[in-house]
Image 1 (tube, rainbow, N blue to C red):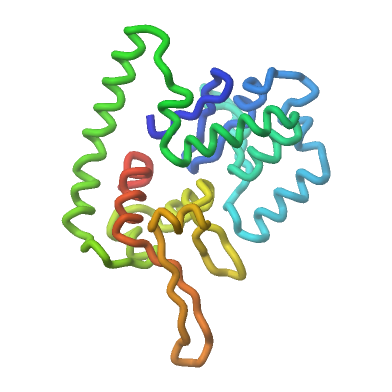
Image 2: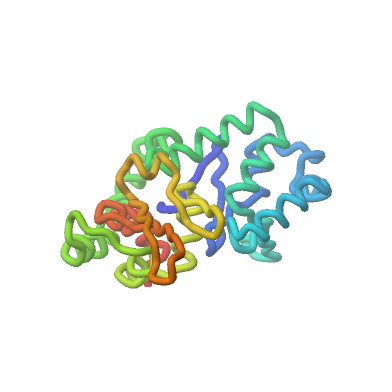
Length: 233
């Protein structure tokens, strides 16, 4: 449930690192053979874009290909999803943006997961309750561990939540909560407005200025509930 993303009635699979299946997106767009992922990657501008994502460390390993099995396909980071959607046509690009915005803000249930029958509604309710019960102990742990009004570094948050630090940061970047600028991780304004992060600036002992993004208690609760079933060890 935590990874369910549906575009035009097509479920978009994700790999273990949160990349999205481009083959599913191709099917969601209508499945035109001339717009298949293989055709997309024949564009020099696309390959240049992939190299730029890698060089700027916006996401690690932007493209991953799985061969064989039910998960077979080409999986890409969020930025490449948007570039692919724009390559398809403007209408599909807008649709993808809308769905991803709803997904990031936790509104996907209302937008894309409306049950079509009573049996589907019962199944959905059972899945939601099961996920809530799985995450409850982890969120409760945060409530007891983190004092309201305090903030923690990203590394401290990863240790508190028992999440791999790099994987946690990658997901925050992919979900457009953080971005890299001049080597520093900074929050997008939308995340800042929800009080998930605070930015600390100052001068270190050696005289150099520094900028550090810290996670508020509300932000830690959000990360725990949003990524608990996926990243918590």
